[in-house]
Each structure stands twice: as structure tokens, then as C-alpha cells.
Image (cartoon, rainbow, N blue to C red; front, top):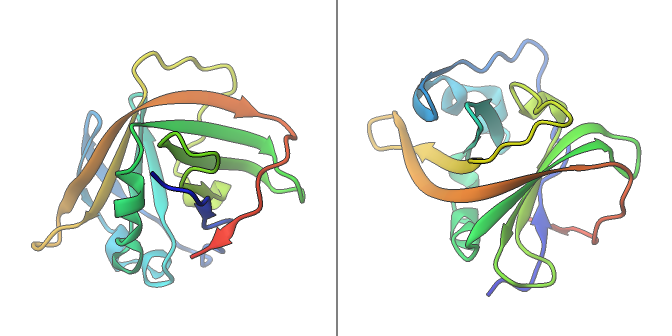
Length: 161
């Protein structure tokens, strides 16, 4: 069971960065993410489609996937305002029963579209992708998720990775 809470918060996205994602429903077929400055900088990226949150993980952060696999489900929270003033932050926490589960926070610029406030997703899924050996997206994990909306609640202090 994970006993720490880790996060990567509000990574700056280089100006002019456009991440393209080709998909079939919830499945990602191709993307230019792994060749982007964002991936080279070690920042995750999230694509939202058909009640699925698809997290793209750069090679430098692939060791974090082992922490993700300790969780049985994912709590996805769209924070309207974070402590410190950041807006529209998407947070994913992998529930493993620990007081402070593994999680990531992504700035609005690291998410291709925001989940509308009030949306209820009965079949929300979290899919995690890495770059496969051929360069194509490779599914590294799949979890059922629950969606919530945060306002101004304090979070536990992060452990940087």
C-alpha cells in the first residue's frame, strides 16, 4: 500500500505547444505528445474523451506507474481554484486505502479539454499510456474512476518526484 502522496503540479507548457491525439472512442491510436517539448520536460498530459481521462506519461516518469498500480480506482477531481490561486487544475489520486494516496495534479494547459462542472460520468475510466516500442501509445493501466469537483479545499503537502 502506498503511504505517500506524490504530485507534479502546474508544469509550464511551452508557448506554441499543440498536442494532437487521434482516438477511437476511449482508446488513443496515436499522438505527437512523446515528441513534444512537454514530454521532453517530463510533464504528463491528459486527454479527455467519452467519459475517459487518458493520462500520457513521459518515459522519465514511467516509474510512477508502479505507484499507480497500487490503487484499485481513481478519484478524478477538477479543482476550480487551488490554494495559491491556480485555476482549473485536474487532480488524479489512485485509491489504495492509504491516508495520502499517490496522485498527480495537472494545470489547465496540461489537459486538452476541461470536464464541465456538474457533469456526472457514470462510467468514468482512467487510462494511462506510455510510448510503446514502436512509438505508438501503449496502454499501461486502466482503472474505474469517480469524478468530483473541488472548490477551495486544502490539500496535503506534496512529496516532489
